[in-house]
Image 1 (cartoon, rainbow, N blue to C red):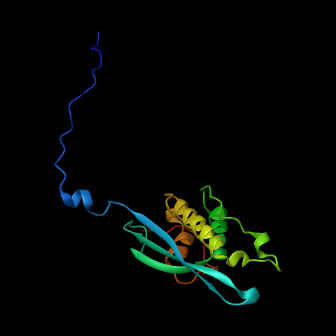
Image 2: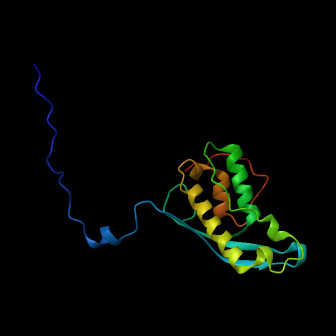
Image 3: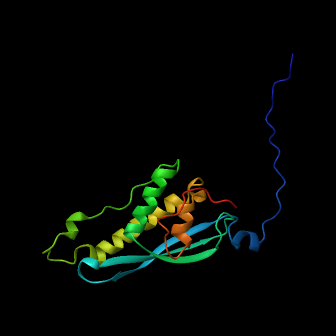
Amino acid sequence: MSEPAVADTRRLNSKPQDLSDAYGPPSNFLEIDVFDPQTVGVGRNRFTTYEVRTRTNLPIFKMKDSSVRRRYSDFEWLKNELERDSKIVVPPLPGKALKRQLPFRGDEGIFEESFIEERRVGLEQFINRIAGHPLAQNERCLHMFLQEETIDRNYIPGKVRQ
């Protein structure tokens, strides 16, 4: 007859934590901020761009600190690329706000400050949800979106190698 299994309840020996451990940078981090909306152009060629700043220490990213300007259509491009080429479920973007684009409105439509801020928050949530996914972090289109000044829409889809 075998002895009944008894759980080992001894504590693991851990080293005391010092201030540099407690308040130093986290072992792995990826921070993406969408901020500083700027509306440019006039008439039908008017649009809003957002600064997308990335800070990370993940080895998969070639730059540890980068900043690019993107417009809503660039976020749409990224979403479409990921849906076509990756195996992840891509979260929705904030809405297109078609009614706000109608002429003869009594307000600024899609260029109204409250709408721009609402969209900025939605875009920040979108990009953080995608970039936080381990499989998406390997996609070339995400790296281009976050770290390259211009998006090469004729790029060859694929994975990033470390």
